[in-house]
Structures are given as structure tokens and as C-alpha cells.
Length: 391
Ligand SMILES: [Zn+2]
Image (cartoon, rainbow, N blue to C red; front, side, top):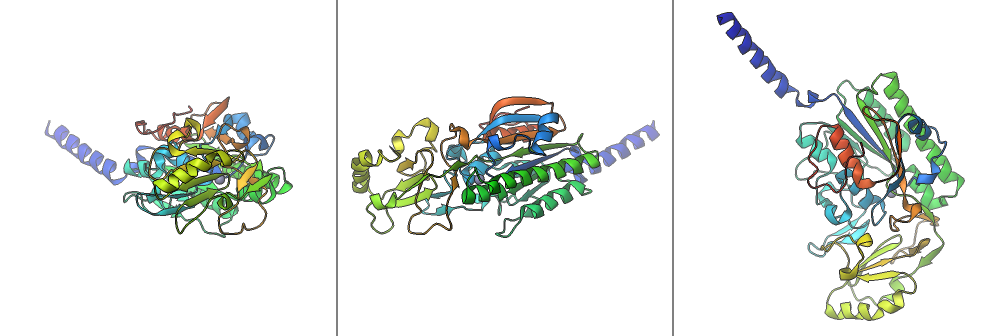
């Protein structure tokens, strides 16, 4: 009897140390989320890597973006599973009237109003690794990803690919790996979506995906890893530039005009300025959509908060606003940011690996990616998340 008691005691001590010394090993699973910025849904047919997943895994034919379909709001939606009115990244450039702070392609996670997936994972004792993801720099309320590679101007897609491959090969693989590849978006802006350069970047993205799939297969890890390949938005040809600033009388700081491609949030200083804009709205509306904040339709709403402009202007498809006070670097041939209901704004979504059955659905939304990954990691609290798991 005494021997049994001693044995049980030793067993309990051993279990205590195993569970507390290595909490992340509650799971051996890893989810990898790769964002290939700016790849449009209809450009991946018969492209290596993507077509391989289509044969073996899950594909949503169109990945619906959010409004505005711009890199920073869209990546915040992928990372948090919420729409911009909840995560607070209302555009790629905006003013927070409450704090007076200006956001312009900001990198810091502290701009987010809800936690990104790497923070949710870390708080559950899992390990995350993040590379160059927009809005991933620094801490979110004191929590950082365990492994981090920041965005740098000269960071090449092939270096990011190597970073992902090394993590797959690592003895202690992180539970969550996220990486942002920006090559296709860059080519889309500079040369347009119908260009050879854009198509070549899409093919190169497929090669990156293929090399990551092959590495997972070579190591027999497809029973442990869920691989997600997505993009944040599509791309359309630019036809015309509109100089909105020339239509707006400006005194000192206000009205503040925050332009991001086809979207402009306009912030006014006082009731007089507000009335002036309201009177002119009829004139504006012949060239672009123009709304008072209180009358923004649901489809374009980024919330009644201190970040959405007092007025919102949206170009028709193919038009963009001229940058305010600065010249554009090079010619702009392709753009995004238009409403997500426009087919050209739809991106891609592919999933392959553990727990994924071969399936094709017509459409998914960016906010579904975070809950899909969380469910895979065994985290099933979606209380503050707008999307739903895709499988
Ligand atoms: Zn983008």
C-alpha cells in the first residue's frame, strides 16, 4: 500500500513538472498563414503551388476583402477576425481626432483596438512567429510574438520564404507562423494587373507556396501543419486621377484630408467648416461618392468613432485621388481600396494540410481566417470575432 502511495505521489510530481515546464506542447500542431499581398482571385488558375492546393485541399474561389480594401485595414482584419469598425484601422492613412495622432501605414500593433491572433495565441501559452505583417511591430498591451522579423524596405520575398522554411525545420516549431509577401502588390501598382510583371510575381508567389508545401511533405509534417495562403485584396487598372484637394479650401491643419488611393477621409474643425462641406457635397457627387459620417451606408462604414472622417469620399472604379501636397513616386497603373463587392477587389484563399478536406467554396471573407486558425489551435472563444471558421 505504502509503495502504491509513493508511486502515485511521484507520478503527480512528474505530471506537474511536465505540464508547467512545456505548456506549448499541449499541442504539436502548427498553423501557417501566408499573405501574398494584392493577388487577385482570377489570376491563380493553373499557377503552380496554388493549383496543387486546389487538387489536394480547400479553396474559396473569391476571398472577399473589407472596406476599404487597403493593405493595413485588410491585414488587421485577417489578424483579428474583425471588420475595421471593430479593429479601428479605418484606412491606410487616417487621423484619430480624440488623440490627435495621425496613422500613415503604421507598423505598431498598439494601433489595434482588439487583439491580433498572435497575442491571443501567446496568452494561451502557445508560441507565435511573425514576419513583416502590417501592424505587428511592438507589443499589444505588453504581449509580443515569441519570434519576430520586422519589415524592412529591402526585405525580399525569398528571404521571407527562407525564414518560414527554417521555422518548419526547427526542432521546436512555433504553433503559429505568419508572414507577409509583398511582391505582387508592388508590381500591380507599378505596372497594372494586366501586366507581364504582375503575372510573373503571381507565378513567383506560387513557387514560394510550392517550396513550402514540398518542405512540409519531405518532413512528413502534413499531419501536423495547417497551411493557409491568402491575399488581402485584388487589383484593378487605374484610369483617372482626381485632385480632391483642389476642390477643398484649406486653412492650416483643417480640413485634414487623409487620402489612400480611391478613399479619402476628411476631418473638419468646427460647425462652420462642416456646413461648408455639406453645401458643396452636390458638386463633389458628380465625380465621386461623398457622404457625411452619419449617412455612410453600411457597406462603406468604418464605424462611428474618432478615426472615421467627418466626411468620406470614395472614387468610382478605376479612379484614384491625387496625393495631397506630394508627387506620386512613379506612375500608378493598378490600385485597390474600392468596395469589397467589386469582383476586382477579391483576393485568394487556399488551405492545405491537417484536417483539410478537398473542397471548393464560392466565397469566404478575410474575417474568417482568424477563427479558422484559432479553432485549429484548439482556441474556440469567438466572442469578439466577426468571422466564423471555414472548416
Ligand atoms: Zn495589400
